[in-house]
Image 1 (tube, rainbow, N blue to C red):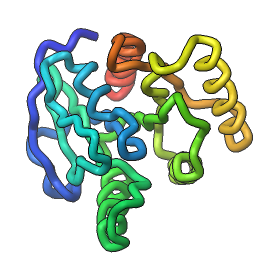
Image 2: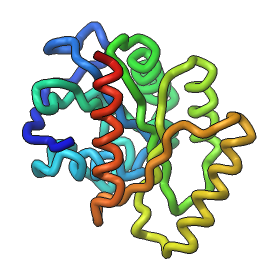
Image 3: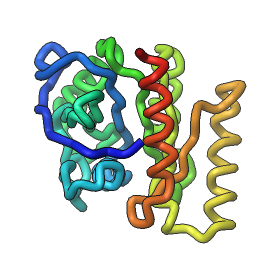
Image 4: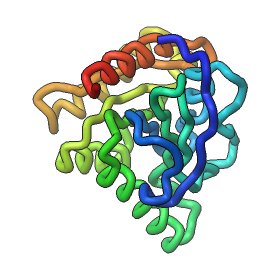
Length: 199
């Protein structure tokens, strides 16, 4: 898939506030500072449509970007951000789950995991919840350029083995880097395939 057009369509706190047409949605989520905005910008290749920051927890709303006038890329707030008040975390948690469980247009949720680290408890908890709720999701290992090939291979195998303790088979898995563009075409081709199925 080639992205020729990517336009910010609006922000909201719940799906009832969404602007625009009802189109297939592909959402991206991960722990704070996992590289989500960088991956979104890399996919669209149209400048910084998603704001990147060294400060975790920057995304506080559900952001929709209209892609090629045919589908939405959805930037969700990060989960597991500890440096936030309990009330703030609860609000973000309700916002995230309200969207994930309530959007009938959500085709797939891309869960981003930092390839440099062993799977965190908060990630595993979130993934298990998705499975229990039967939410279709894929896994994207980010920042793969930060590890050597052997170290990356071992880390992916380690995390995959851990996930297979909970699933008989893994969902689609992508290895990505916003710096090198690795994984970009694979993710977009997967989205293209899913849109055809959706229609």
